[in-house]
Length: 123
Image (cartoon, rainbow, N blue to C red):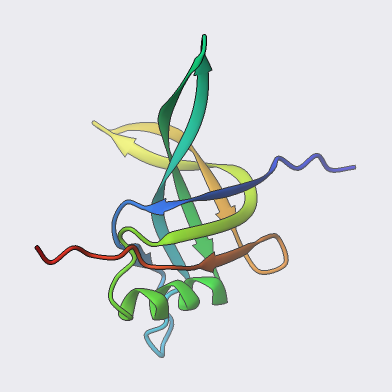
Protein backbone atom coordinates (compact mmCIF):
# COMPACT_ATOMS: atom_id res chain seq x y z
CA UNK A 1 0.00 0.00 0.00
CA UNK A 2 1.25 3.46 -0.89
CA UNK A 3 0.43 6.73 0.82
CA UNK A 4 0.54 9.77 -1.44
CA UNK A 5 0.50 13.39 -0.40
CA UNK A 6 -1.47 14.68 -3.37
CA UNK A 7 -1.83 18.46 -3.58
CA UNK A 8 -3.55 20.94 -5.86
CA UNK A 9 -2.23 24.48 -6.03
CA UNK A 10 -3.65 27.50 -7.81
CA UNK A 11 -1.36 30.50 -7.87
CA UNK A 12 0.70 32.87 -9.96
CA UNK A 13 4.17 32.11 -11.30
CA UNK A 14 6.73 34.38 -9.62
CA UNK A 15 9.18 34.16 -12.55
CA UNK A 16 9.90 32.19 -15.70
CA UNK A 17 10.63 28.48 -15.28
CA UNK A 18 14.13 27.01 -15.27
CA UNK A 19 14.67 24.01 -17.52
CA UNK A 20 16.96 20.99 -17.31
CA UNK A 21 17.58 17.50 -18.66
CA UNK A 22 17.37 18.45 -22.35
CA UNK A 23 16.91 15.54 -24.76
CA UNK A 24 18.69 15.14 -28.11
CA UNK A 25 16.03 17.31 -29.78
CA UNK A 26 16.45 20.13 -27.24
CA UNK A 27 13.19 19.49 -25.40
CA UNK A 28 13.33 19.83 -21.62
CA UNK A 29 12.67 16.82 -19.41
CA UNK A 30 12.32 18.96 -16.28
CA UNK A 31 11.02 22.44 -15.46
CA UNK A 32 11.12 24.15 -12.07
CA UNK A 33 9.05 27.18 -11.11
CA UNK A 34 7.69 28.90 -8.02
CA UNK A 35 4.05 29.76 -7.38
CA UNK A 36 2.79 32.55 -5.12
CA UNK A 37 -0.40 31.45 -3.34
CA UNK A 38 -2.58 34.04 -1.60
CA UNK A 39 -4.35 32.51 1.41
CA UNK A 40 -7.16 34.38 3.22
CA UNK A 41 -6.81 34.37 7.00
CA UNK A 42 -9.57 35.58 9.31
CA UNK A 43 -8.35 37.52 12.34
CA UNK A 44 -11.29 38.65 14.42
CA UNK A 45 -13.68 40.38 12.03
CA UNK A 46 -11.02 41.12 9.42
CA UNK A 47 -9.72 39.01 6.56
CA UNK A 48 -6.01 39.32 5.87
CA UNK A 49 -3.97 37.78 3.10
CA UNK A 50 -0.93 35.62 3.65
CA UNK A 51 1.26 34.71 0.67
CA UNK A 52 2.88 31.28 0.52
CA UNK A 53 5.53 30.30 -2.03
CA UNK A 54 5.77 26.72 -3.30
CA UNK A 55 8.26 25.19 -5.72
CA UNK A 56 6.91 23.05 -8.53
CA UNK A 57 8.94 20.44 -10.46
CA UNK A 58 7.32 19.55 -13.78
CA UNK A 59 8.59 16.41 -15.53
CA UNK A 60 8.36 14.73 -18.94
CA UNK A 61 6.01 16.01 -21.60
CA UNK A 62 4.53 18.47 -19.09
CA UNK A 63 7.93 20.25 -19.04
CA UNK A 64 7.67 20.69 -22.83
CA UNK A 65 4.18 22.16 -22.32
CA UNK A 66 5.56 24.65 -19.78
CA UNK A 67 8.35 25.55 -22.21
CA UNK A 68 5.86 26.27 -25.01
CA UNK A 69 3.73 28.42 -22.70
CA UNK A 70 6.82 30.33 -21.57
CA UNK A 71 7.81 31.03 -25.19
CA UNK A 72 4.43 32.76 -25.54
CA UNK A 73 5.33 35.86 -23.52
CA UNK A 74 6.80 34.29 -20.40
CA UNK A 75 5.29 32.72 -17.28
CA UNK A 76 5.73 35.46 -14.70
CA UNK A 77 2.35 36.54 -13.37
CA UNK A 78 0.38 33.83 -15.15
CA UNK A 79 -2.16 31.76 -13.27
CA UNK A 80 -1.06 28.15 -12.87
CA UNK A 81 -3.14 25.19 -11.67
CA UNK A 82 -0.89 22.31 -10.60
CA UNK A 83 -1.97 18.90 -9.35
CA UNK A 84 0.88 16.77 -8.08
CA UNK A 85 2.53 14.91 -5.24
CA UNK A 86 4.61 16.32 -2.38
CA UNK A 87 8.25 15.33 -2.68
CA UNK A 88 11.72 16.35 -1.52
CA UNK A 89 14.24 18.18 -3.68
CA UNK A 90 17.92 17.74 -2.86
CA UNK A 91 20.24 20.75 -3.11
CA UNK A 92 23.62 21.75 -1.73
CA UNK A 93 24.34 24.73 0.48
CA UNK A 94 27.96 25.33 1.49
CA UNK A 95 28.77 21.72 0.57
CA UNK A 96 26.03 20.43 2.91
CA UNK A 97 23.32 18.22 1.44
CA UNK A 98 19.88 19.77 2.14
CA UNK A 99 16.29 18.98 1.23
CA UNK A 100 13.26 21.19 0.64
CA UNK A 101 9.62 20.52 -0.14
CA UNK A 102 8.59 20.48 -3.77
CA UNK A 103 5.43 19.52 -5.63
CA UNK A 104 6.24 16.98 -8.36
CA UNK A 105 3.96 17.11 -11.41
CA UNK A 106 4.43 14.30 -13.94
CA UNK A 107 2.31 12.55 -16.56
CA UNK A 108 0.36 9.79 -14.84
CA UNK A 109 0.83 11.41 -11.43
CA UNK A 110 -0.59 14.89 -11.92
CA UNK A 111 -1.61 17.70 -14.22
CA UNK A 112 -0.59 21.27 -14.96
CA UNK A 113 -2.54 24.01 -16.68
CA UNK A 114 -1.14 27.46 -17.40
CA UNK A 115 -3.96 29.91 -17.78
CA UNK A 116 -4.51 33.65 -18.07
CA UNK A 117 -2.06 36.48 -18.25
CA UNK A 118 -2.63 39.46 -16.01
CA UNK A 119 -3.42 42.65 -17.85
CA UNK A 120 -0.40 44.93 -18.00
CA UNK A 121 -0.80 48.63 -17.35
CA UNK A 122 1.32 50.54 -19.85
CA UNK A 123 0.82 53.83 -18.01
